[in-house]
Length: 274
Image (tube, rainbow, N blue to C red; front, side, top):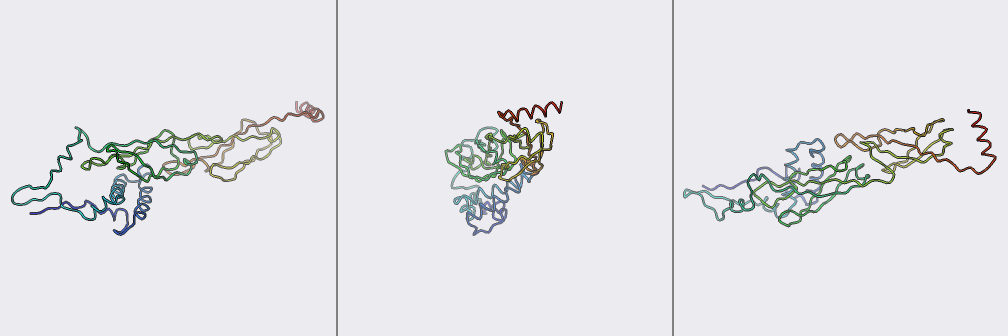
């Protein structure tokens, strides 16, 4: 009696593509589904694993060919078990007690504050245990914080084909911006203004981190420690996308007045206010 091992699921159906889909179509479908189903964005982890497994197979021409044209690995007949090779020799080679999957791979990724604001799609290359270089398209969600680790299931080491693939762990570093500071999901900027804007009222204009022109009205008699909040222009929450605020601080500049007439007029105003 002959028995062939069949594919456990339809990878084409998982990605929503046909068997004649190009590599570009497969990559596009994967990226769309990965964004929707990624566990870090509230997606279902089991669905994400299926999507990753399907993409890992169909994005590799060799694996795709083997998947499309499966060959029997074992054959049984009335004479007992027969096989042209012993697959368990490869399985035991490199296997350590307690090992459940291939090793995880950790890489470092440096982002700008602009990347954090908008999110980032990129193709990355990294070396696995066997020395082979793997490539993966990954999506970094908007709102990610400095120092966090993002885990991408099944994109790590896959050297031992009899074990599940490890994960790819991306360690995030965010470069400081010269003008903007992040405080939680708020973006803070300090604007230079005239002391007379605080006394008499005025307006402070600026450009946001993503290039929008905004301004704040400075009421007459504003104190130099005042802060102004502009809602929904800050960093997106990594879970629900809700944006924080822009917080505007003021740094009043004191003019160097050398005109004696102006100095005397200011002294007169000072005396009158006192």
